[in-house]
Image (tube, rainbow, N blue to C red):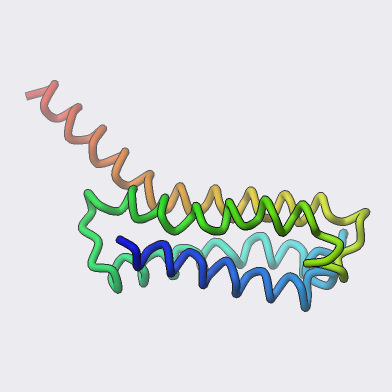
Length: 133
C-alpha cells in the first residue's frame, strides 16, 4: 500500500507544477480553457486511477483504502500550498484563486468518487440481493 501514497505524491507534484507554470491560463475566468480544465480532468483522473489500481494490483475490496492513500498526500500538501499560494502559485491572481480552490475540490471529489463509489455500489447491490433472496 505504500505505493499508493507515492503515486498520490507524484500526481500532486505534477499537478502543482502544472498550476505553478500555467495556472493563470488554465483558470482565466470566462475562457474555454477554464471549462476544458474542469471537464478534461474527469477522464484523466479515471485513467490515472485505473492505472494506479493495476500497477498496485489492488483488488476491488482494497481500492477504497488505496484511493484514500492516493488522495491524502495531495490534500494535506495542498493545505500548505494554498496557504502560501503567493509563493507556490505566483502567476494565479488573487482574484482568481477561488477558481483554483474549486478546481482542487472538484479533482479530489472525483478521485474519491472514482475510487470509492464502485465499492459502495457493489456492497449495496450485494446487500439488496441478499435481502431480496
